[in-house]
Length: 97
Image (cartoon, rainbow, N blue to C red):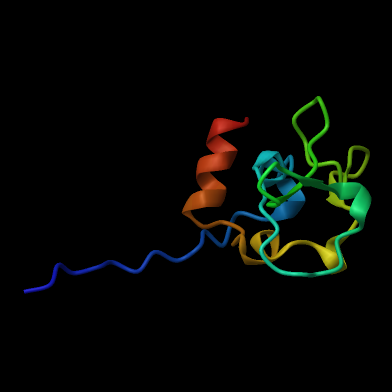
C-alpha cells in the first residue's frame, strides 16, 4: 500500500507585497535560457551558470529600493517556479525575518 500524500496548498494570506524578498537570497542555478542579462550571471569552473549575489547576500537583479526584481520578465526558471506562499516560501520567510 502506498502512503497517502496530503496536498499542501499555498497560504493565500502570503503575498510578495508584504515580504522582504526572502527568495532573492537563494542560490539560483540557470537551467534554461530566459534572457537574463550577462551582468547578472556568473559561471563556475564547470560551466554551470548562476545568478550573481552581491556581498550583502541579495541577488544582484533585486532593486534594493523597491525590493522587486529588475529583470522580472526575464527571470530564471527557478524564480518563475518559486510559488508564493508554499512551504519553500514560508521556510525562507521564517529563516529571514
